[in-house]
Image (cartoon, rainbow, N blue to C red; front, side, top):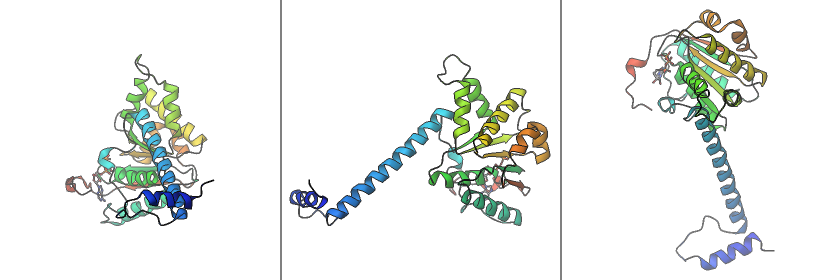
Length: 246
Ligand SMILES: Nc1ncnc2c1ncn2[C@@H]1O[C@H](COP(=O)(O)OP(=O)(O)OP(=O)(O)O)[C@@H](O)[C@H]1O
């Protein structure tokens, strides 16, 4: 049987003298080959995950606007922001094997989406699947399953949403949620918590408002484990966004 060293010697014979190979002997060739295999299989996992997100919501898991949001580009100018940033970092760091959900509530433009996307981007880099979706998008996807043209059923969509490692539901309370919306959010959070998967919620309502809107049952499930509830009660950052910072 040919050894990696035999193979390397043969390769060298065909190699033009001015070509510098990435490896100097058979062992290095083997290691390089294994590394290429590992990179390729990681790329396949990433592609599969992206295709799954594409199938669930027709786009990648994090919207373009928030793809570059990170912990590092979240600016800290007051104690509230400092605490929110530290807690979000801690949440991402402890995500593996955790069932804890998070609720970011408070004023518009204060960075709830930014820090949720920073958590999401950090997890994606660690190979997790993440989907950040508004209630409106969620409902239009659910309703889309009723149309004759859709090849995905309501049950299948619910299942897909329940299997994403982290699902963040944005704009809770933006519209007066209908009974159907409450049932769907209930089912998603219920299924996710039963399979030990955390959910993030972003809202302009305070916790009492969210309780009133979604009901005690859902919000109680959001408290599983060492859950994270952060109030964002400082000035909006939006007027300072130029659009080219990240
Ligand atoms: N502390 C911060 N440092 C840097 N950028 C910030 C900060 N806070 C917010 N931003 C930026 O301001 C914009 C608005 O923030 P974001 O979308 O996170 O607000 P939000 O709290 O989710 O608002 P809403 O409740 O209206 O959805 C985003 O572009 C975000 O990246």
